[in-house]
Length: 251
Image 1: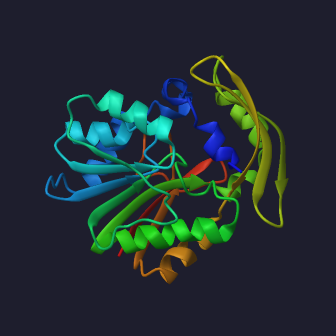
Image 2: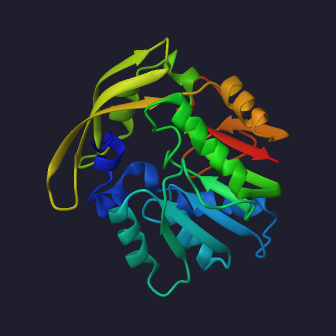
Image 3: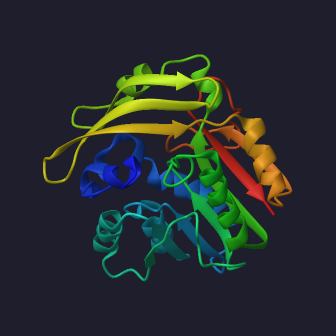
């Protein structure tokens, strides 16, 4: 049986690229470049690359990038958008990657893989595979849902305030304090005009959990900031107003 996140991303490439949360690609890649000192010799893997927006932009700038995703239709859209660019898009499950000490940088942005999994153990498997894929030294840049936000705000209200007509909607949110999972009904229209109603649940993390998980995997330096859409910065201290957090970890 397919999980909600597998069904969600089927035939949802063009629509996904129109969502408000995918509009910050250029400046997010500016931040990534700065973080790796504009070193074009580094190998980059984009985990949960979706329609390839970061992979494509970084390749245009001269970097060597592999993009991986679980969704065939998202990868098809990525390949179509990449046209003549030399990008290696591969289908893989982030919980079971075939790479070992191969990459200088892992990016995992916009909840492309972590933290969508149905158990904490599965989410942790993704981080384990990230650590295994990275060289030593290596760097990981990812965004994830901020559990501190949910202690003060309603996800349903936040999503309604940032969603435009035609975008995905999120209703009937219930946040479980014991598991830090938000359960909701997500309604999306796919690229062929079919409406899909999905029962979703996503894991929200608090900074101390992320720090501990990464430390157990051998990351020595872990910095966490507020993730502003299209405006990643080390100057943004994480607050309860940030829906997402930006994590930068080094082996």
